[in-house]
Image 1: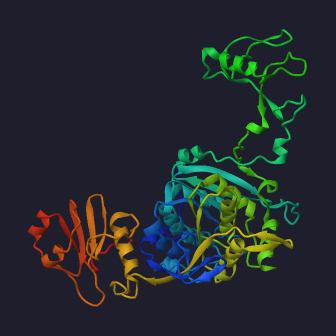
Image 2: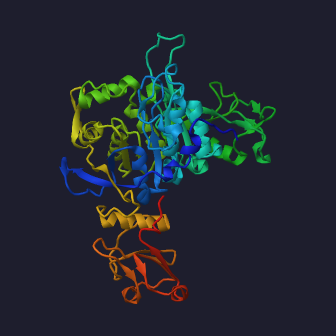
Amino acid sequence: MPTLHWIGKEKVVNHHQVVPYRILEHKYGYTDGKEKKQETGSGNKIIHGDNLEALKALLPEYEGKIKCIYIDPPYNTGEEKWIYSDNVNHPKIKKWIGEVVGKEEDDLTRHDKWLCMLYPRLKLLHKLLSKDGVIFISIDDNEVANMRLVCNEIFGSNKFVACNVWQKRYSRENREAIGDVHEYILVYSKDPKAFKSYRNLIEPTEKQTKVYRNPNNDPKGRWRPIPMTAQAGHAVSSQFYKITTPSGAIHTPPDGRCWAISEDTYMKLLSENRIYFGKNSDAQPNIIRYLSEIEGIVPWTWWPNEEVGHTDEAKKEIHDFFGKLDAFDTPKPLRLMERIIKIATNKNDIVLDSFAGSGTTAHAIEKLNAIDGNSRKYILIELEDYADSVTANRVKQVISGYKSKKIDIEGTGGSFDYYELGIPLFKEDKNLNEEVPLQKIRQYIYYTETGQPLEETKNKDNAYYLQTHVDTSYYFYYKKESLTTLDYDFLKSVTTKSESYVIYADNCLLSDDFMRKNNIIFKKIPRDITRF
């Protein structure tokens, strides 16, 4: 398989593993039109901070649980002035830190910088994606080739689903030799077969339904004729038979073709007046398909602005919330995000957007949930300082109601929680940061042991019990104010019966022979705590 190489690649391939793990610090919850100190428990999160660190902070709770990811990363056009600032301590990359990435003629390494920025983030996104999850990536011609190769490397070339073309402009572009009117939306899935099995159809447009007519005043409504032949490559004998029309004409399948249905099915449809022989009743048969039977259509890879909106439409949507706002040059329209979410999600699925911008993803989810009654969840991550004033503010207005073109838009209802990236779990001396809440440390420990989120439940075991997973019980015997020792007195407090035990403590007084006989594994704090 072709691979992509660039300056600094070998230093960022595993960079996601050394990114410091930080806790998420809750700032407020938003529900019933008000900010509250308490967490809402809604599952909806808006996070302010570097998305590389924020993605890592999500792992203990969300690894393998995100059904749909959408990202709209910097396109690296040379006009964006984005900054590469990840803390990669190596000369090849260190010289780039804090540098504004400029135009091609001014910055010959801008593609290398872009790839170094993108790669570790995609690695973490891949870990967060569920087994049947799907990722949608907006990109344009500047980096689409590199993006394909990077995604092939991280997700696998066999995980590619589609390259959608979005018509972002509705008016002709006359500034260049060839007008730029489109962008791409790449789609990869951990399991493309499972994704295709969703078969989440979209509503046909008025243009697409015009082919359905009712020239004979059929009481069942508008219909269209569907050709009854198919390729004969996999046909069976029951698909070859003669058909006599009402006028007496006889038809057989053309060479290399067969009838698409068996003779028994044909006779049944004929009795139901579902076969059409043309105006003179002598043409090759067609099956009548009624518009009322169409639940939806499969989306194509061509997404015209008539169906999903355009950039100017997106700017006007932002204008509804904030007036003129220059922070977003190429925002995504609400209809575009609605299509992605309709295609990729159902019921209670979680959607992640790690380049959240103005919050269009959350807007689309709140709107769709209000329409179809589903309970999709969203997690938005935004680095810039407008994460609260713009990203979260827009979602607040969507939930509570706002004005669009001087028309009152009813609020969707809903709730979310707003977070900042907090302090790291480990200090520079590699000891546990005692300022981190104990509950956050417990969640981290259990995740590193099992790869599962810790769900605290009331139990009859001691206060240091975490949970039992695959017949192993886990304990984190930790006190901020004093050292802890795994000894016989501690074991007397253990009441959960398991095949084996993993117990964290500062010290251990039990003999190796005793621990082997009782399937006990001692792990020393902080030495044996896994860093991921």
